[in-house]
Length: 502
Image (cartoon, helix red, strand yellow):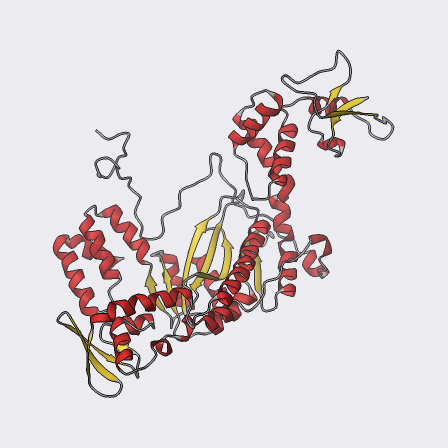
């Protein structure tokens, strides 16, 4: 006769097990409340000595793993237990302490039992991609392996995102890569735009071994194939040399811009003068060439080196891909509902921008030139507006495709609605169109119907593996970025922190 908790589960998953009787082992501080006595049919299930020792040892890897599995599967959020959480659970349930190493091994086993092994994940990737393409028309996926069938590259672009991009998204794409912390490491490539409500709109994802010339050229070539030829495309990235080389080769007609955030972070590292940081921000956001040149001249006067520098400038793979697809599915649903709730002609963000500029134009004076052109004066500064060509000499109207304050006061003077001069990409109708398509899940793997030639395709894990030690937590600096230097919150100086401040 055995005593177990009232949870009815298979004997391999029993959390605790004690033998009824005076001499039976008992865990310290373990209450018998909530236990029931059940008859045990030894003919149905045999327990060998090794299994018995495993189940009666509260600190075995298997026992700790079961605790982690129960807690992880029972929580609604995607909570991943830390070593401290696991230690606390064991302390509460059994009154014993376990080592950090044992807690880590148990966590790895628990996650493996929930998510499956990384090796199985790579081998199922081909079937997953086939089902994903069948469920979501227009979706493009590709898997590349080497001569030994080991994973090399992966690409995915959901059909719904491609439809929205071609109909309702501005032709500006940002590309970047970030390292992965899974068992076999790698780099996640992302190509994203912004919708009419100023929200991130992912277009494509890729996975490769690292950020190098070959991987970036392959990803951008797949992106080019998915998007097709676009004459007025603008691509933004950091200063990684491989991206620049690949862009010139794959997108020869596209214009390439450098992300001002990365350059700004690098300036903060190399040059500690706060005045330089502010001037760079003003220069980066300047709409007029003369304004940019003036600010850049000030930078050169403060420190000529700055001007010279600016002139030179852990999930398994299958679960990772499914998380990305699931994230896009949620975004498409919530943002479609958000767009449907908007009662204005423009999106919420664009409408807010327009109202802000409208308030600025309250004291502007208009000098008409003809029925569509005028000169706008404010505080001794003038700007010439042409409503026909949707332009202003301040350049804000030309670049933002939303009327500037000068254009708004001109619209008011000529009794024209400024809403009609906004780009179609900022309308609520365009936002709805961006998220009009649905993204469908792939369903349960057991229900997949996959052709044999795809099901039998072998995809082995890549040759690279996670090195010994704690995984990296700090982002790898992008191309052109310097090493981050800490700043003391007490004295404001760089190179040390509050604790080491003298």
